[in-house]
Length: 329
Ligand code: UT7
Image 1: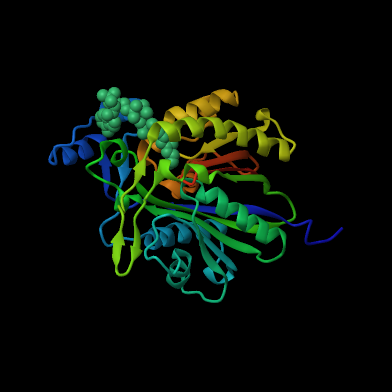
Image 2 (image 1 turned 90 degrees about the vertical axis):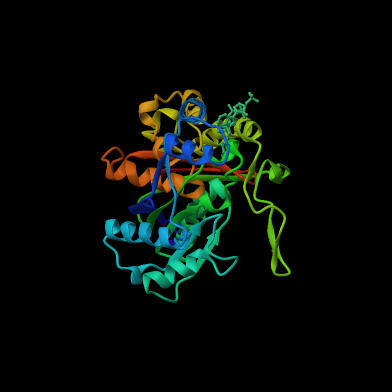
């Protein structure tokens, strides 16, 4: 057998970081009330399950959060940054138009030489990035990868639009993915449908030295909700079939943390009780590409998810993009 095709990838360490400033729904509602925008803890909890989110200080960027998460993942994997030979960051809120956040993380880690690049698939970004890293490890292009999701969505929120500004937060999560003789990542499924670009977007862009168009987040929440509940069941079934596993093999589901009602619907369809679903949306809000690795790290450090457990990660978001990764931790 070809030794390269026999190679698998496995998560050997997780880490995460939340900026210290935490706003409860009441804190945010009070802040919005000063601008004449009305919302309430009750509405936010009932419609989304969100109770609090973290916002980064004005001078803190995605690469700062990513660096903190990466250090923790490296410590957990007992690796030195110099041993990493691939860095991928999933983000839609980079520090600059270019270069990539991944290159800035590489610089902050004090290492040079290995490939470093960003993946932009909005809230599906982490499952996309993990799939790319897994593929590169399987083909022998890398052996020890840092895969990070990092966001400062607070920068692109329209605080005059109560239908979106209460939903998102900032943070970062990271994993170390290493070549392994045993799996690891069992199967992945990635999808996109560009017909739905407009339902979740930040339409502004830089041109001729100015920002043209609106640089703040726009979302048709109901359209996103309806698409999300449909594709999350389909992609879960597809990735299970690819790995020749069934619903009954799932120890833990980590869906993208956007809305507790979407997670409950997915769990119901997969016949999983909610105590097998990792939920952090209540404390983090929607941190886009950071939400899945943040939830994974909290569940690992909290002792819920243990080595050997079978975990289904599911992302969904702007693009429209969606995807899933099934793995044995
Ligand atoms: O990360 C990518 C994935 N993103 C998602 O998965 C988000 C998916 N969508 C959602 O989670 C939900 O659609 C929302 C949470 C965004 C909205 O929930 P909804 O149940 O679809 O509410 P709605 O948009 O139908 O609004 C219901 C009412 C409206 O009032 P009227 O027209 O019924 O009088 C809104 O104006 O709630 C009102 N409303 C609010 N009220 C208080 C909307 N936002 C707020 C608010 N506070 N923050």
